[in-house]
Image 1 (cartoon, rainbow, N blue to C red):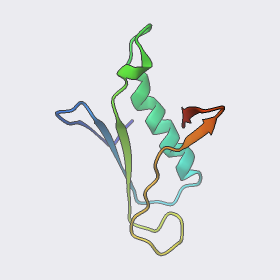
Image 2 (cartoon, rainbow, N blue to C red):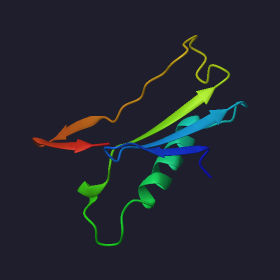
Image 3 (cartoon, rainbow, N blue to C red):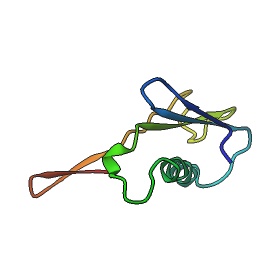
Length: 88
């Protein structure tokens, strides 16, 4: 179950999750929510390039990583292998 799920005019999807309790493995929870969004957007046989951009946003009433910051930003990472980019 996603707390808030929205779509803009460019078909970008947003999942906003409210967190009021510290729970372990926040990174894995984010990955799980991201995969839930992706699973609903393609039909069998559709090209993966059709997946729209997606964002998972956690709003916490605590510092989830204990680094005294009010905002953390994580982005996908590009890895180059034999001259070809791999996106994660």
